[in-house]
Image (cartoon, rainbow, N blue to C red):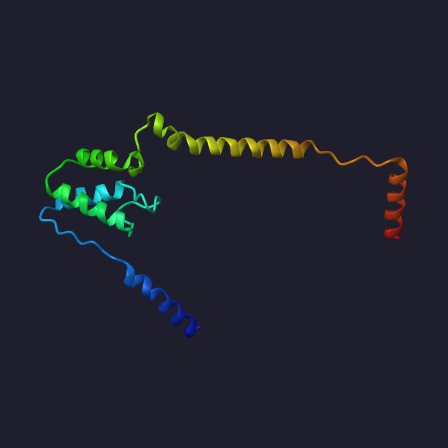
Amino acid sequence: MRRLCLIVLFLALPLAVHAKVDAYPFDDPKLEARYKQLVAELRCLVCQNQNLADSNAELAQDMRRLTYEMVQRGESNEQIVAFMVERYGDFVMYRPPFKNSTAMLWVGPFLILGVGVLVLFLFVRRRGRAQTPQLTEQEQERARRFLNDKQT
């Protein structure tokens, strides 16, 4: 067991060394809070399932640096998000606005859920309609004899 733990530790060590943490100094706690809120709301375009705060991709690091610089310059959250959307598209936001180009992002999951429920309903309905085949008189008699022979 000890060897297994050591092997896992040594295999995981390169991952810990590879991880990179950006440390941006803030003089004002309000600016730091804004920065953290922004990087939590913006999506990493490389990872796609992580926000900028959680991603270690190079693009995410660049986007965090850019966000930091814009916050330090005093730009508003709306200006920063508008810049990111203009540069990378609506997909950069975790909650993109509802419009024609993003409608599938909002409606798609519900459509998939609806199709899944419909398929499940049809499957259960079809299975309920399936009836066991009726036995002929000869088959029923043969089954009775077989069961009676087993009981004695």
